[in-house]
Amino acid sequence: MASLALGVLVSGRGSNLQSIIDAIAAGTLDAHIAVVISNKEEAFGLERAKTNGISAVYIDPKPFKEQPNPREAYDHAVLAALKSYGVELVILAGYMRIVTSVFISAFESKMMNIHPSLLPSFPGLHAQKQALDWGAKVSGCTVHFVTEGMDEGPIILQSAVPVLKDDTDETLSVRILEQEHRIYPEAIQLYGEGRLIIEGRRTQIAESVK
Ligand code: GRF
Image (cartoon, rainbow, N blue to C red):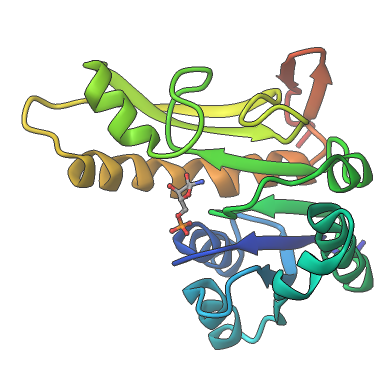
């Protein structure tokens, strides 16, 4: 059977994309990246894709601004691209756009995101800074399925990271990122093995049959 076809959406540096590329190369993730798509032409994630022989597609949001519903129109274009590459699971990896219901319903339970906090704490932007500002002693990261509410979908995996006395936004972000790079490929592998069972808000992880 062909390995799981991933479509990875990025807007920036793409270090999570790189962790997925590396996990595939290391044989710990049985999948292939069919396409990397970005809404930013300069996204370094697109470069990473090209360097690794992966199709890299930039879809410019500007032309869609003229349309009555620009966000949905843009998402239709992204969807068409994902479908043309035969994508089975969509991976949001630092994708800085809110995805519309058009997109979410097309890939219901087949789209994941990673967020740099222990959700439901600190959703939205600058989650690491939010955790520091709040005085949290522990933060971390969360891989979750994508639903309509921002950062609200069923949680798949989380990893806790202690907040240290002298932490800055940067130092905490680096330690959280290390964990992101570990749990995102792991979550995708669990999906590929058919072991993620969504029951309401909870994602049960079935035992490995191997
Ligand atoms: C990560 O911190 C991720 O949790 C958040 O955006 C950042 C993306 O980083 N959603 P990168 O582009 O994968 O390096």
